Length: 359
Image 1 (tube, rainbow, N blue to C red):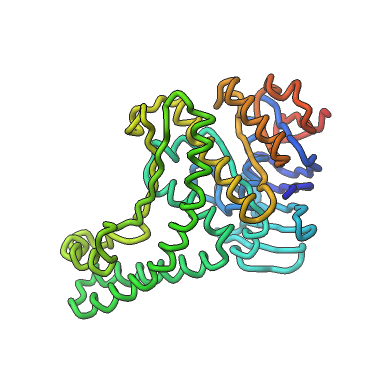
Image 2 (cartoon, rainbow, N blue to C red):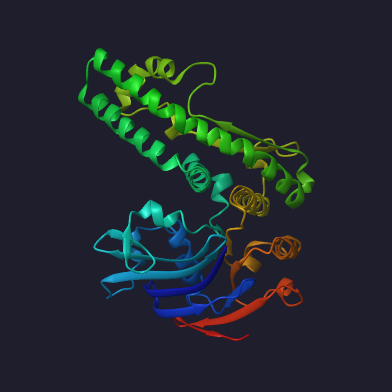
């Protein structure tokens, strides 16, 4: 998968930008605040419909503008795709092939981009929500039924939570416990099957990027105790759920974790090790996508030189060269690891929200 053209309108400080990208490494350099990260963010939005930066989606729209819009031309094994995404009045509008409006999920399925950015260490040090969202993005792209299963589960969860807040009777909750359990079964299976395929790729990557920590072990937690059914777990925690007004067991509480022989708890990792660990997570997800779909996703690396030491930068560049994956990379200057690579590189200079190609 290659992103050959990217057009951005009114995204943060970028008023209008049209880029032709190479199939190899696309490097965006310039001072802080110039708009480098916003370029990567635009591509990311076309794959996730949310930013990797914190803040509400409406802040993506450039100040004084009514609408933010994105367009991309993508080369896939199946042929050329054109996708578009706009944000206006608090809502997303998605298109495929310029003039055909589609639901957001259909557009997002056409383009896959994974991203390592300054906040990626939250995959390791943060709460379960970021890890669950990361995992679900991967499942979404390799399992066609995932989106429908996820929506069905969320509808049942909302109904049960409403009943808990309203103080519904035991018989009514019995019915919705059963409904929630039925909806949870296919969702949980899709996640677990995906993680079974993801785990060996992740363990291999962790051995490459963090050999000093010894053997890694990764595990998946479904969101309720393995020894009982979800229906039974819901009955056991019903009094607690009534008191809290929400459901405390189920796939919405799923999580996954990494442990090393030399760092059995995540608190034992340094910030640099957290970043290297997160990088391994992102690249393993890209590798699984390539296995499942027959083509690599685009890989975005925001502020590469500041986030990784020279050794890890070299490892990433070698992986990109060997795999043939396309990359979007940002930095203040051209990193040393890209000065002597034989991979195709195009350098763009970004300043004051404007971009020009240097090579």
